[in-house]
Image 1: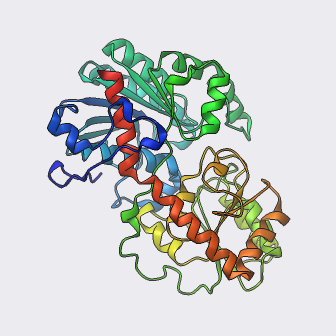
Image 2: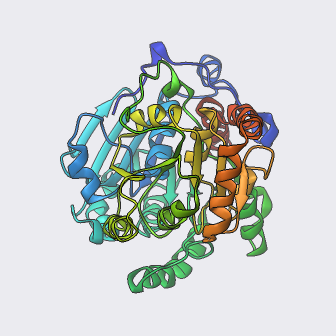
Length: 427
């Protein structure tokens, strides 16, 4: 993992619009100079997934586990906080081909567990030894909760050992927003409804990505002053110096999907909508995951091989080139806490067509910064895409507003807000 050194760190401001500045946010560098942020502050970050170095065998990694928003979120947040001299130890799941221990300025990443995707829930067993060793040294614990359940029990154990505050970020609530699609996920759902409430009671701060999730938790009895809405950010520097078209052999206009090929993201609906989408357009699906064989079969059965293309896994730092050479971005998710890829598409100036579900409407306002359609509605999805392809002035209007809105979500500001919560919990 590459982390900006303290000497090259950028200022990380606090965003007052979300009401967290009172917790001690603001510029990380200014805070270090004033002594508000101690270089010795040590955060234990527990997350089942975390970004990986760009030099590894990405094809092999994609076969193990497709990279998604939570991996990028935890990596970008860690890097931004390290730029302000916040020391962090990250304990996360093992990935094939990735070193078990990585060190960079202010950051140590420990990768543990069983290198089999279906058994990733068991990474917590291997993580126990590391938590027992690191916990007595830390000032704060930050748990990142997704669809894997091990992080909250590990956080509770670390909190008991260290007797320090704990914050939890809910990237997905298994108990409240997760929609299971098979028997194993139904088991996870049952377990999650028992584990998550314990974590909610013990956390000094709960961070959620959307106001919708904040309201949901308040309705479940979590006191409002502990729940903070901090969405994911966008790394604007990813779009600096974007090079040529990565798919010069494909014609334009081009409809783009980026994400895991999994039931939640529902790329199959986009494939089925292809028959109804303007025949001039090509559909490019970027990503990998468990539904890839099903999607390939659907494309073959429908005779769409000349128009619908699967790229396989693409590393995150290369995604801006795909976004910059597309004409419409489609995200037909069945459920989505937020969809951080939408922010990146908006930053690239792409008009959006997305499902009206979960937290998506909080960043995509229908007919202002994008088009919202009912989930799993092939005809509506195709109709909204065709409207943008056939009406350049509408597409440009949505594109302009989307790009303007995306600038609110810089990782520098997001990190400042998280730091504010850290300060509130530790002082």
